[in-house]
Image (tube, rainbow, N blue to C red; front, side, top):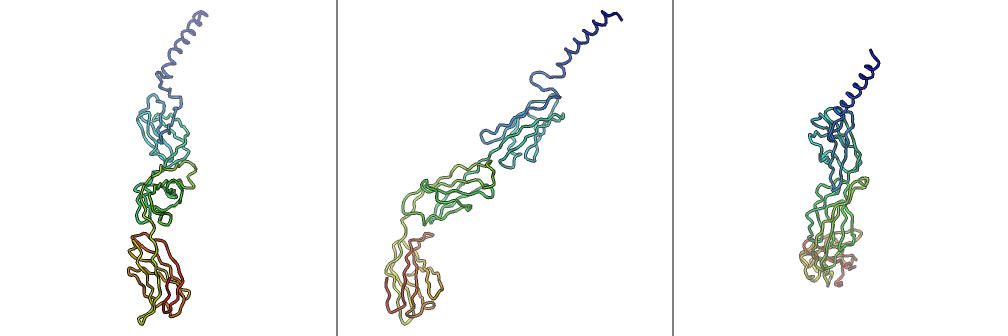
Amino acid sequence: MDMRLRKFLAVLFAVAVLFTIPLFTGASGVRAASDPIKVEVDTSGGGAVARWSPVEGASYYILSAGGSSLEVRDLTADIACLLPGGGHYTLTVTADTGETGSAEFDFFITLPSPTDLFYADGVLSWDGGSAPDGTLFAVTLNGVPVAETAESSLALAGMLAGGSFTASVTALPAADSSGYVLPSSPAVLSFSHPSPLLPPANIVCLLSEDGIYLAWSAAEGAEKYALSVTAGGSSHAFEASALYLDLTDIISQNEEFTVTICSVNGGLYGLERTLVLTAAKEDKA
């Protein structure tokens, strides 16, 4: 073959190759089959939205993260449903044509706020909802922290004088949440608490032919009275709606004993009064 003909055929082959390359590299942003898929995960706003570059000829993609997978026919998807909780994850996107790509990301979750705050009879209660195991609830009164508890209620009666109060309850992450769980927004409740009930006065121990009795005068606002009587090393608890209590079975004549008494209204227990009495003819305090 003539040397000039050989050179002409070589140039013609090179030109043919140059015009063929675009058919395999793709156009208009569609990636070639040999290129990996570019994956991005947006976690702003508390969600997890994935986006990835298209693969020519692919009809669907398999998304895998957190031990779960999802089939998608679009180029974006909300992947929060794949994630069991807050943490560091890798999302892998695989086209049905075999190409794959991945991206690492941190996913944070915010605990749900407690709901149904309610105050009655000295107890603040709430519904923790779907808060995970180990969640603590931080309680404040008028902006002052008063307790952290795993329960869904807190007795406040002993912390309150009469007046108006604002309580807040915030869900806190469990100790093992590794920083990927954030506290909830506080739930807030305003309420009023009555002045504390005063204990009864004129408390006396009386002896009669019928037995030994403890008696007292009525306290304002009291529906009943709670008492604790200690004698001979034993303690006994009572509630009385009347203004006296029969102690015949637990106290002997001339025996010294200790009594603690407070007024009760609904579930509210008032201030306590403790005194030492003797079962003599008359002992008055």
